[in-house]
Length: 396
Figure 1 (tube, rainbow, N blue to C red):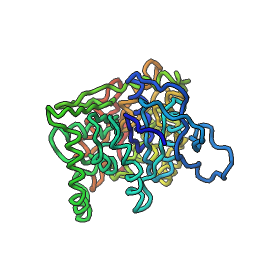
Figure 2 (cartoon, rainbow, N blue to C red):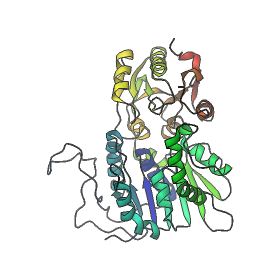
Figure 3 (spheres, one colour):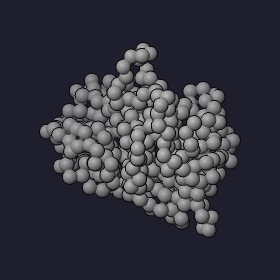
Figure 4 (cartoon, rainbow, N blue to C red):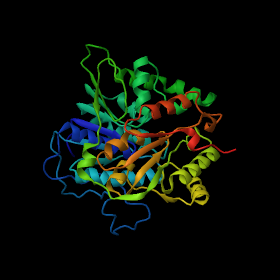
């Protein structure tokens, strides 16, 4: 049994795991000694027992794996159920292992009892940790874990555009709700929120400690957030990514970056397809880097309508772009990457551009705040070109 780690990190997406590695690099505390093998990481789906695994994927633990030094960061992966996210998380966990960090793969979804089993398995380490790092403060499971936390220091690593809402909502003393869910949901959703309210309230208090309590909150992000109270801010400039990968080989073409705005019910699917087609024609794009949550049906329709090569990256886009090859121009809709790619690709000669979202593209069920929030993501991006909505007209 490994001793409890003073710093415990919880991640639920590949980007969150990348940003934990960036945070640890920025701390200047590289692991020392032998890299421990990963605990409990499943084989890749469809691979026979005993068959050689993907060399970049994490392997089952060996009995002789060295115990981590007592000052080590321990990363706990709480994987989602979708295959694309799990595949990217396996690859990111492999990179974390190569860096010398201990990674624990803990299933917390997939059945009614999975969350309770995971909570029981993690409780001891959570209580013992002196510092806790979380990748998604909006995650209900992370909020549930926070009810056990005794640590005096909490760190929130960038979870993309949601970090903007996290800082704003905690400053206003509001409950933590993802921006695209505000104002959505019927009676069943409201009843679930009511039942969950005590846990949510505890999490909110953890993230906004009163002066004099001794608790510290750090936000580690590439987003232009404004901290408040006792919060401190550290900029994630992707120094680890730039030190480990690249510079990339550049192609002559333009690459488009996909978004899950259709899947989250914010943007109409037909409008999105027409916008992608217009961007493809105007910029001569040849490849489309799909978001891990984009549906196969949507991607197939995009390919048939535009002729774009659909690329499903096996790592977060910041790493994929840094490794290359990548287009000399990368065009995205409002998303996290318009803030992170300029850092990851600084000095490479790549131009990052962001296309505005026309309010007419929004669905009738989109949050009332969706249009303004997406506009703020675009307007606050640094070192990017802005493509006006007229350059990518909506259908009909």
